[in-house]
Amino acid sequence: MDSEAVARLAGTDVTHGSSDDPDVLDFSANVNPEIPDGVAEVYGEALDGSRSYPPEDYPEFRAAAAAYVGCEGEDGGCEAGDVIPASGGLAAIRLAVAVTVDPGDSVLVPAPSFGEYAREVELQGGDPVAVSHDDLLNRDPEEFALAVVCNPNNPTGDAYEQDALAAFADRCRAAGTPLLVDEAFLGFTDRESLAGAEGVVVARSLTKLFGLPGLRAGFTVATGDLRDRIQTAAITWGLGWPAATVGAHCLAREAFVAATRERVASERERLRTAFDGDPRFAVYSPSPPLERSSAPFLLLDCGSDERVDEVLATAREAGIALRDARSFDGLDSHVRVAVRLPAEHDRLLEAFDVRQ
Image 1 (cartoon, rainbow, N blue to C red):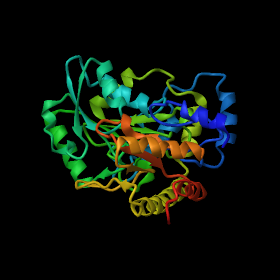
Image 2: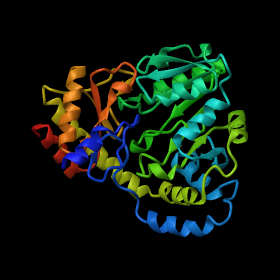
Image 3: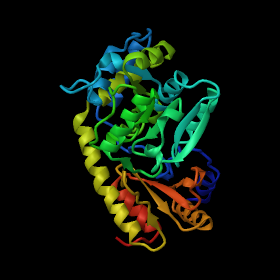
């Protein structure tokens, strides 16, 4: 890689990772490097529709989203009308926080985890109370106006045992505390969504699994009064025609989802084995009620703050971007590595001389 490209990468400071430099192999963002077939054609056709406003009820997108999260099955607890479209997962999270948090309210948020939860709470005048994500389900939800969980969690990648999370949702419901579940990475797993559970707001996006972060398409799922409040707060025409049309197309691509899950599971295990076998790194491993990474990334402990700088520098020299995880609460010696494609993993492991 030439010196100018290395300099550009060294100067890139994107809080959540990601590089738009075509000369950089980006392991810093947890985005699928592949997209479903037909996206370009569907997007092109949607431009004709963009000459008019999209329908306010987004029937096709809502139906596809409901089917995608399992609401339309025999045991589904919600329906298409419980889906509220949003311009990305963060917009969905903002809607949920906005209708549940008042100034002075305390909100339970996980740590280390996605930093935008605390920011959204603070924007509403609330007080985010950070609790270790592996202990969060033990807290009394009655103390809070809202509880937030990330499942699987970012940046650790671990997911809650299904029964433990369901039991916590029951306790939140009994306490009258809404539960916001960020399922941004759940599509990479075969785990059931909590969409449709009473008192639960699920936030989803098309960013990660379908490899389209710039499309800005997502949605919330909620029932009853929570759904009504979110629907009232949602921006009219908050999802453009291309995003709604491409989103509906992607959400119905079952074969693509299945193939992605299989590839990510296999390649994640390959990377785990390789890095765990190298004394310079330690792959994060959780304790119950959490189960080890089922997300498209791994969290690596490099041993020290100084060692992180060395690892990032080595990656830059090889034209590779890793996520400096020191920006996450409580992590001071870690990097996050996305799971991508086999040949790209060859290049990553070669850069660090990690034996396979």
